[in-house]
Amino acid sequence: MAGVIISVLCTNYLVAQNINGKIISSESPVTILKIWGSHQERGFAYGYLLGEKISQTFATYSNSISKCKYRKLRGLIENQNCLEIDEAFLNEAKSMIDGMNKAKTNSYHLDHIDLLIINSIFDISGIKCLSRIKSFACSSLMSWGETTKGTDLNGASVISRHFDWFNSDGILNNQVILIHIPSESNEQPWLNIGIAGQIGVTSAINKSGVSAFLHTAPFTALKGSNDKEYTPVMFALRKGIESKNVNADQQDDIFDILAVLSASKNGFSRPCIVSALAPATGRTSDRIAMVAELIPDFPYLVLRGNEYEDEIPGDNLYTANSLLKFKSRRQHGNRNKDMISALGEGKNISSEKNWELMRDHSRFKVPFDIETNIQFMQYIPEMNILKLSVSTDKTPAYLQKPVSFDLNYFFSTP
Image (cartoon, rainbow, N blue to C red; front, top):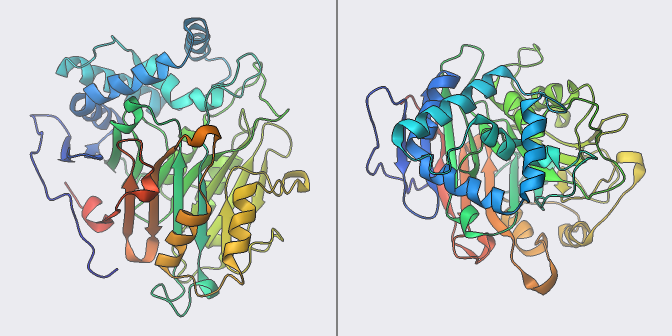
């Protein structure tokens, strides 16, 4: 993949005085926005430049939730019950609203509480006092080391990842690659591949080459309680991705993601799974790839590496929506079984093979053949390459032609 195409040749920059941001590409299927400066400056630019899309995303969320339930959600945020959100993210959300108001794109008269609900809805759905809200159904395959030797990767690491969710027009039409260039000295450039209005992380990469991807786990008896505080998982992942050297070991790697997840004193409000990957060069496997199974019950976090006997061979880690290690459940769903069969001995996995395994053997199947594959992506840390295909017309992303991006370009000084 030497000749990486940057298909987002700078089009019409939407630059205004004191707006710390520019739209690199607004062409379908995904908007690419770069913002820089402090949390407040980045938030303002985000709201100012993408206010219409943020409003459309909010309408999609709110239409899927009853008014009664939405009032409960607002109460949980306003009264600071159950959810613990860093002040930096609160201020960023307020600045986003300021930017939307300035641009006159706040068509639903949103406030920062509405934005925080969008970014915490996954966590709130796990609290006992509220009923279920639609979940992600994502999956990922990480390969590195001995598994990728003898291929174009030559021992380097790679992850391919499906992002599956409900494919309404309000989601499909408002997909965004959001690039942050922080001015804070303890933070680093990073990006999230997601939906307009997201402040937290679902699929993120930082300049150090560390990446983190969120998966949900099945609804079980494991649920959070409305008398405890929980950190929203998308905000926790952002802190791990955005911060430099979180655990003070002088290295930026997946241990920083682990440190942030471990710091949540009550675990997380509903079961979820995080896949994290870093460059393989010069690192041992425990610092290259991990799967963290998160639950609202002791021990709160269960770590799975390639040493775990999950029937996935070699230097590979596969994640769908199953808790495999927690209480030795080994909840192998159909996708797990398909991947185990397709991997065989798990050797000679090239970047293309990693992509094909996910494309052909990790599809989320729901009744009536409703497609939920919103985004399909691959990240190769050593090469600084992001490969992405997205759904725009309800055709699944894995059937769309992918585009490759050079992350050196994305993370360059604005």
